View (spheres, rainbow, N blue to C red):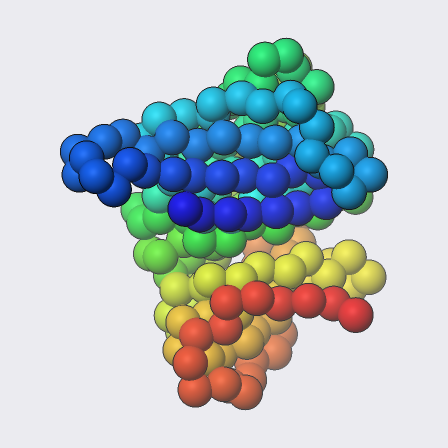
Length: 196
């Protein structure tokens, strides 16, 4: 069983181990004031989410999956259902997602050692989402992402113990990223980052 949680969303994925060919089932529960709400929906069968990020302004969740995609899930919908699938950003499973609420950008890191930068469409127009750029040249696949809004930078925790910081600039119709800091404080994979 996989369990992911953000301030508003809890995600469970389960598989019947007694039946090896059983399809994985993913359920999403909404959290309200620290308690699970009754609203539950099966998101997808056969796709396992590995990361979740909540967009509070538009009350939607972004779920990074093992299918090299990010699911966009409006949380006000009843029943819960996927509004759009962001594809064409990766060749490997999405391991981490981060969201820039001010500029409405989504960052998705995958096991192909890249980070896709998306401009997700607005609520109800998710199909207008577009990929702005793809950051490549990471030292190893990133397992953790953290958006640093005060400095417009993205922190990455990588498989080889490296923590790096990228400046992510978006302008006129495109985007660029520049490595600003890099350190190797750990011997093993960095799987979580937190700003205190």
